[in-house]
Image (cartoon, rainbow, N blue to C red):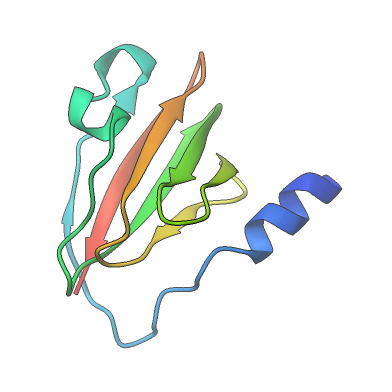
Length: 103
């Protein structure tokens, strides 16, 4: 059963539209192999959505828009990334994840 924190945080994530098609996936990353670009402010293109899929452990996903949000993600709670939204991640020890991109 999800903790109340996860239930609240997960409900704030936007859902992927059903007509989106996956077109690319990153390799799996662990804490030590995460590209530095993911650790600082970046965004997807205006027509690209993404999903962070955590296989083990957890990470923090931060939305860096006018109201900064920090969202916990784990294997039960993937994270959807909206197009053009500035964000960054903060991987936790023991995390293993990948990112899938959609158009």
